[in-house]
Amino acid sequence: MNDPRSMLRTARLTADEAGLAEAAAILKRGGLVAFPTETVYGLGADATNAEAVAGIYAAKERPSFNPLISHLESFEAAKVQGLFDETAQKLAEAFWPGPLTLVVPVAPTCTVSDLARAGLDSVGLRVPAHPLAHALLTATGRPVAAPSANRSGRVSPTDADHVLGDLDGRIDAVLEGGASDVGVESTIIACLGGTPRLLRPGGVPREAIEALIGQHLDTGPEGGKGPLAPGMLASHYAPRAQVRLNATEIKPGEAALLFGPTPLQGAEQAKTHLNLSKNGDPKEAAAHLFSYLRQLDASGAQTIAVAPVPETGLGEAINDRLRRAAAER
Ligand code: TXA
Ligand code: MG
Image (cartoon, rainbow, N blue to C red; front, side):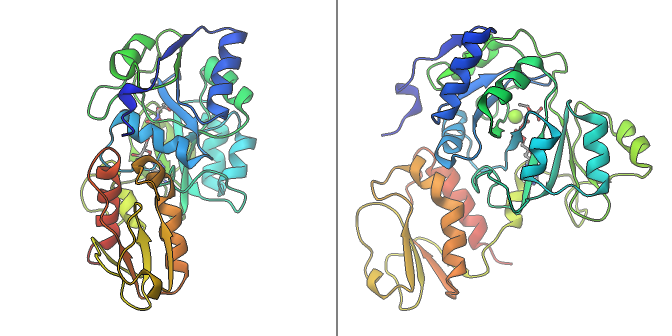
């Protein structure tokens, strides 16, 4: 069921008007397109479409939901998605378009899906400099979520052949644009109030950033304990309610997060309930996960009881995220 390997023939799209139009059309209908940026090739999906974003995790076989970077055609377009304080604005004006990602608070007008943000109240934004990336984003007209276009645990791709070596048959298309010249991912800076924080070193050197803003960057996760593991920030989002995993029955007054066609005992006593996927499709479940957790939390229930989710496919990432949500705090 839902094995991305069996489904697709990956098209090679050339870097001309027709290729760009096709790439944009695939993105708009929820497909996956790898495209060149100046850092590495990205595996793009419409960031506003949670099901499309779930497809990224499935194709990459990522075992957990890291927040993804959403790519925009311009600073103007980025301002619709995030709130830029004075420092963030300065950095955007100096280094965009280019290999810099800014993590900023979500704007009220943000359209990036909860899944692409891994449920956080912040959003990672980047305006890439590569002319093809820029043309694709303009043609698509919406934020495009894109991690590096490789399978989880493999090296980031800097040309279309690398991408196909990892993802042929798992994605709809790759837009061929030659070699990426930076070759390492973007530098990621969080501007969330207080001293800006270096989350990941990358294409823009730290010194250039510190020179511009006239201060040293903090390093590592909030609280400053050791190096930042990718995806660790996802653990910052936790529901207010207790989370009870692998529930086999629902107790009166609990909120219930269900999965699959089989009803859980006591579900009628739930304060409220939502089903991640009535068909038991892990990709659909992933698309709903973060927004459903939020909705259930907003019901005011003390406890969110979560039905078992099988470990297959995206189930591994879903369970990773659920275990974090349930962890002692
Ligand atoms: O160069 C690049 O940045 C490439 C190309 C394709 O643009 N993209 C890339 O994306 O490396 P990605 O999605 O793999 O980067 C994800 C990292 C996360 O591991 C996290 O460190 C950071 O971006 N990130 C994104 N959104 C965040 C958020 N809301 N809060 C904290 N960190 C965030
Ligand atoms: Mg990567």
